[in-house]
Length: 306
Image (tube, rainbow, N blue to C red; front, side):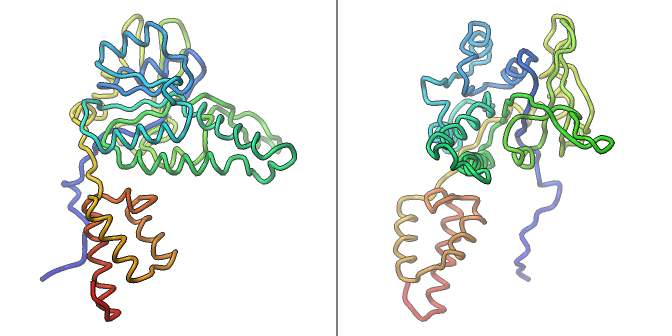
């Protein structure tokens, strides 16, 4: 008996690579920890990690550097790099974006300048930056790599005894980012010989909220070994599998069939949302095949030839 049910048995669902964020004060060790993950593709949005010790760490891990002079401070260029990492065969296993705070704030500042004085009302200057963050996360969700968003730290405010007071620290970035991630870490450097990571948000059994683990113990880096022990080294160090996008023929067929039957805006939006895509060109090969089958059936129901 055939069924339309598509869910898989839990044993068939694998954890895959980690997608997370880390935040902390300058010098806490965020970048150093992120670069300890396997074969990093490091996107430096600030230009502060081109120093010798960071470059040595990248070289030792067989990583690569993409800096401000390459276009890292622009969302268009950043997303283009992630699209390439998602769809091309390569050796990299970890993507580090450092810092997501910088590129997000730059996008807001550019829009504030474009709007001009007195026109930045109801958060208008944040809209393009948020739209770019949503598009960025769409491609991150397709990326078969470990991903670390490195963010600045800012104060968290709340009501205490009827007064607004500082109650803690959070990542200085779009507040919806953490919803899309497995894990958020607060990196701290309490003394000369100790660096720690405290879990502030988690979907992972091995990383309970408010739990803490060491990144540095004396003169030893211990962060990656501790993380790999909890998460699973095999998942973190697995090769990245590229996404196979729709072929040129599939896109031509989609264009032809959608020319025969006009889809409403809501139908197009539903198709793209289901595929986690912003345009037909971002459909995978299998998604395009399913969409073409659906279009052909819809045309036949309407009494037209496909």
